[in-house]
Amino acid sequence: MSEILSYLAAALPADVSAGARLLALQCALRMNAYLHVELRAGLLRSLRIDAVHACQELEQARWASMVNGPGAVGVAAELRDATLLAQSPARPDRRRAADWALRTVARSDPSSGEGLSECDRIIRDCGLRDQGFYGVLSSLTANGVLEGWRICPDSGDVHWTLARGR
Image (cartoon, rainbow, N blue to C red):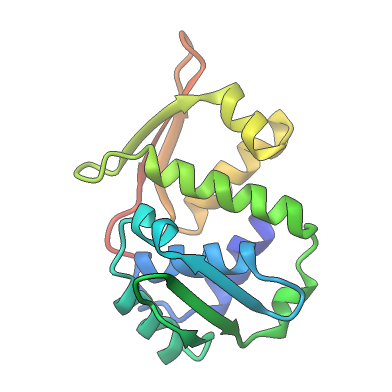
């Protein structure tokens, strides 16, 4: 996950919105071996982004070409950077990370961008070890996806705040 976040930070222009970055993350994690990805409409709705605008941004950045949509059934895209094929996690691991990233956004309050979940549940959902989990959270913060995070010492819950306006 940290490799893909670092890659996206370098590959996408600085002015690409947070919504487009979130869409790019889902695309990078869900693509097949031919750099093709299909995202269903329900998944796009759950991201709580303007999918049309995000797709336009990714096309303008020359990072993706939309083959179909976004529309009522979703979006199909061809990613334009073969560097993605060199990312180390296998596709099932990337899909699990994509699901976790989606659940993390879904667990965040849309008005405040704050979220809360049990630390051990997130570690289990992501298939990470404790050390890897803390590294991923640090990478998400360093790459501007999260404004910050902390673990509550009493409950072990992870509290996070999504970054705004990036």
